[in-house]
Amino acid sequence: MLRFLAILALVVCVVRLFAAGLLTPGCVLIALLCGVALMAFGPKLRIAAIAIGGLFLFTKLASGGDAAAMNGLIGQLLAVAIGLTGIYIMFKALFNPSR
Image (cartoon, rainbow, N blue to C red; front, side, top):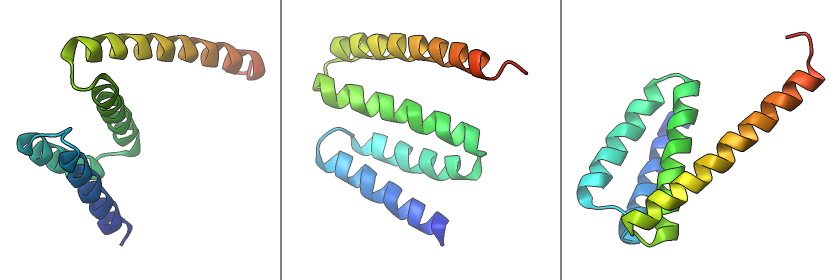
């Protein structure tokens, strides 16, 4: 039942993105097929794919679809994410010295 609800949420999200003009019909088909395929994979791959897809859609929305602005925004967001990952590793080593 939960998988059906997840597929329903995927369809609603993709149709709303298409209605907002952020996705082309070809992208809608790819997004739906990839979303269903990702449900069959493990949770780690699913989380990674959702994060990458969310980054792509956020940058597309924030840049207004301009490719150069999208690339610049993705670069800046990835730099922040890499910096935060380094801080996370430092805190994890500080508070969990057994590993």
